[in-house]
Image (tube, rainbow, N blue to C red; front, side, top):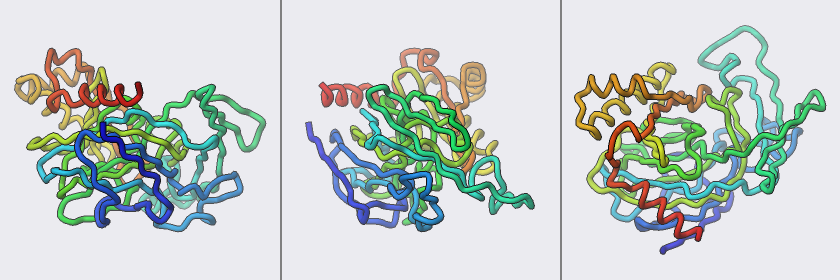
Length: 334
């Protein structure tokens, strides 16, 4: 088993997908032990640390990477299996912003009412109890919420030598902010450039679907990822697989186009896996599918189309990569 550990310094963090040299090369079959910073780079530490005062745009939402996967070429697919995602600190933060989030005016949705207050909430992270403790700012209300760690941002370099800010989700991945991207899940990303150049960041102790206020329980993470390369198989949009479900993503504005992209990919993927014609697959997905929301606050919105694998018969995807990587992760932890 090839295990590689990487803990970036602040200067080694990246703020784009594409446009940057890799921090390292890994072989397929590698286990990566990674540290990722929170979306504020660890600079928002108390309720008095307003992001507008302690952070500098565009240095937000840093990712760890990129990593060059040996042998990866355009037209291939990277499979990244999240073995574990563990908060790295005993605290996390969340915020509201004046012009960011789903329930406020933004620069693209111009409103005359006053902007929202910029406010910070600090959560206590208790790994022994497996909770994140919420504290209201204007009362003594407090409640323990179960931890459900996930990564808001994962992706590869876009095609055509493009560089995209890490906050933007698209076909390359990016800041999809779906709570489905938790430990035990494999994400499939289409390779656009030599080596793939994947990176991971934006850990969340937990997040509601939609990330409605614009931030989750933002946490630095210690994350373990198993890497595999599927040669000669293209993936048009990021796809996810857990033990029981297949999922397709779509990122766009308006939200209904993100929904359509994810549903289109799931319908055509189902057709390919089962041999059903397109309309038969459309009918099946229409009756068994789910549609979890990723984000409705970023530069593009993200939707997920999800269905139980049990209804697709004995089919396997990407040559049973999820099962192999899950076994590799189990061997690592045992």
